[in-house]
Amino acid sequence: MISFNVPPYVGTELDYVREAVTVNRKICGDGSFTKRCDGWIEERFGAQKALLTTSGTTALEMAAILCDIKPGDEIILPSFTFSTTATAFVLVGAKLVFVDIRPDTMNIDEAKIEAAITDRTRVIVPVHYAGVACEMDTIMDIARRHSLLVVEDAAQGVMSTYKGHALGTIGDFGCYSFHETKNYSMGEGGALVINHEKYNERAEIVREKGTNRQRFLRGQVDKYTWEEYGSSYLPSDMNAAYLWAQLEVADKINEDRLSTWDAYHEAFLPLAKRGLVDLPTVPAECAHNAHMFYLKCRDLEERTKLISFLGRRGISAVFHYVPLHSSPAGLRYGRFAGEDTFTTSESDRLVRLPLYYGLAESDRDAVINAVREFYGRK
Ligand SMILES: *Cc1c(COP(=O)(O)O)cnc(C)c1O
Image (cartoon, rainbow, N blue to C red; front, side):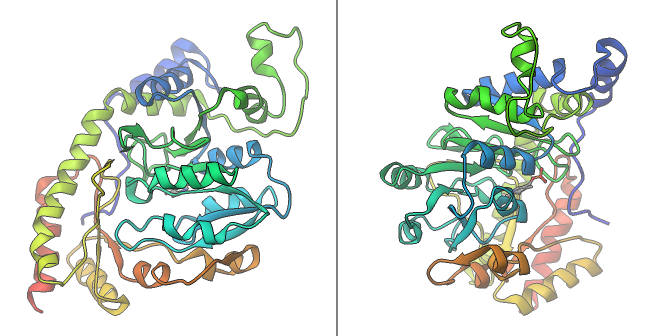
């Protein structure tokens, strides 16, 4: 059986978790491992501030709160994304305005954003699908001209860059996920990247149950009080210890994933040349992190056949996402701006192949051969 995903495990995780429990004796949030992870993100990615969160979802929720959205304000996002890109903003009363994607990267089509802007628009939420960057120069230019904020959903984009800039550090906020299906993991977890200093203090308050506990801990105030709305967005230091083990060897994990991705890409180029499948496109200005390898079949029917063909050979391949604008909640909270030219039709064709840290070459080759066999019969 070849799994679609196996959570990353590099071997030092349990030593660090044990250290948190028996040496540091601090397992609540913001212990030494959390601080190390925050600092690593800031240094490695040139981020003004990074704060670990309990998930990518709660990083998005914090960003939505910090954007100060009022009920009825609109946000622009792709429909082809995970549900919580949307729910984080629904939580603060935003209306969702879905914009079509580009077929080459499956990212929001930057050329269709401006037509979706109204006088209620406040935020653009580009999602860097598969760790390949959206066209950020264009998106930041639109945001600047219309005074909009940009929250990057970089859940899949940790270690990817756009024109040399780390994803998550380009907009006003960036949101990472460290879920077990992502490149670096702590089980459930994430991080909020804050790219302007002016949000730092409020972010700390929102993350610490609405209190100024962080200022208290730094000795800046002599008692801590409830300042405003907040929740508990900080993860346990045990989880941060698990993540730290992986950040220490982030390049090794990245290279391992990229080698699998490159092997898939090379193996399937002949199928693409024969017009049997479409392969992911990585624009020249983007360096990606091999978060995902997908193929696009001719249509939904062929995809269903391919997935069951692989399943019969013990290979787990999956598809996603059902476009949000056609889901019950998407219909309730949002609308699609313009035409759905690619969102539905391209998502129907997409299939993801097994890709995780440590995927054996023999398993990778078994996947390659099975896909070739499927198309060999055509
Ligand atoms: C994984 C993911 C999320 C949510 O992250 P969690 O850590 O699972 O909450 C949000 N957006 C995208 C695009 C994702 O892939």
